[in-house]
Amino acid sequence: MQRRQFLKVSLMGAAVGITSASAIWLSQGNDPEQLTITALLAKLNQLTMLSTEQLAHLSHGEWNSAEVFAHCAQSVEFSMSGFPEHKSALFKQTVGALAFTAFATKGAMSHNLAEPIPAAPKLDRNLDVNLALARLIQSLTDFQQYQAELAPHFAYGELNKADYELAHVLHFYNHQQSFTKMS
Image 1 (spheres, rainbow, N blue to C red):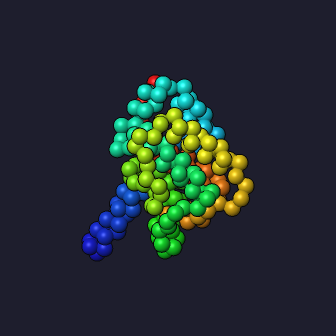
Image 2: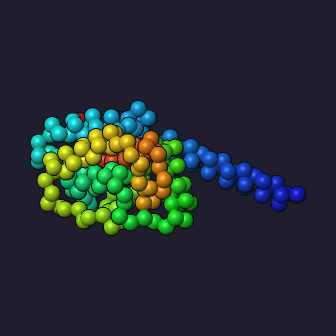
Image 3: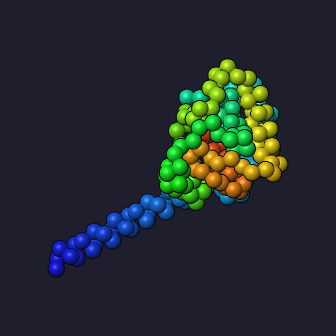
């Protein structure tokens, strides 16, 4: 009898622990009002007011600011034109779909900030940071106006426009974590 009670209490404790950890993780997302391309474009337009030197030194991660902007622009552009390489269908239907659902629910994304998009053109470390930022802004503007069918995401699979918008915004905000905090 004591063994059965111990197992019940242990299982209940584990369930409470997992539920609490999940609730904490999910509560640490972004403000839902900031999870739109319009809000992101407003932030990016503020960055255009920085000097080239300030802009170039925003990122303190493995990639410089220009590489981050170019990488995020690639992702937006590929959502319209097609990604050069995909994970397996099984991956996209399981792990990929689950990851996107978790990110969307949380309102925040977490991924390797120095991992390129599979088979995408190599990022140019010497790219002009102003051109890279302009490319990102243009890609997001193009995405807002895009009316044709969107390409499947290389990891998440089929996404509708609203889901892709969220994915693009969360993707940039995740990369923004490598940026120096601006006052």
